[in-house]
Length: 328
Image 1 (cartoon, rainbow, N blue to C red):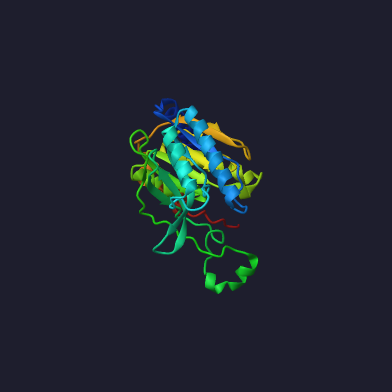
Image 2: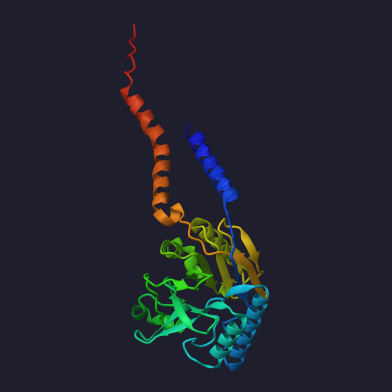
């Protein structure tokens, strides 16, 4: 009975999924682009590096504009220096966005003057050159962006572990708002995309488009880069949202609400990944109920497994005792 029940449930899920994909009505309204400059950030970030980064991304933004992109997304911490400073780098970037009529989400470091700490952030910049908001990474990487119990582990200094702890963003941050035509955006930085709760909560609050900004350079050409990018399709499907993923050296991609990869760039190749997208307002069961559904499924499966065993034991306990054998 158990194998039949499980098989029936799996078939029902597959049929439902197939039907949902076939009946999904997608109506893209604007083009978005993920910029992949293939620039290694783990180098001396001198004046020449700053100039190279700005020139490369401005050229890619121009290319994206020629393909109709109204929104461009930079990778994690791609911007050299502090974008809060009105310096020559920012002036060049904002001038390019103004010429292209583009809104940009730019990965960079944000300095918090109150806590005197840096935050790993994604800045939203309008075509007018105004920074209208930022998303600060909430889930920091242990020993990469902060050291747990730093004062109790002084020997880590000899291992060149990060010298300064970054600031984690709060869980009540305002949504990034791209304005008319683009709408509100839910963001995740790097391995935050592995945890569904961050993007789910932003969609629950009204995000119509999702963005992942990451630097996977340290994965090299291992399978980890592909494994990390594959998670984007799950985040898109479970929230019914288009998703734009910009990775410094790949894999950059744009994913449809059904989890289909619409456009993608290979590892360690400069590329502009563009595709039509849409800001959506649908609410999936996962967005509405979260992981309660998973808990419910666990309980159902536990019942399917345990009920036959308990029922069989009860039947044995209620059966009459075997008749004693006598010897003549």
